[in-house]
Length: 74
Image (cartoon, rainbow, N blue to C red):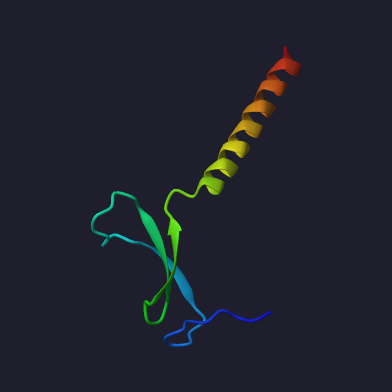
């Protein structure tokens, strides 16, 4: 599989940073940028729905396990 590299400097190291310099929007986004030169190579939604859904699923599983334990103990 090919390794991703920056189109500007050819670095293979990237980072995700909060985009705090966007004018004209109230939405928060994250930039995927080259760690060496800072060139932006992608944008992510700050409120990642799939991550939130996975956290909620885990929280519900834990809650269900607690309820089942309480039912068994009573």
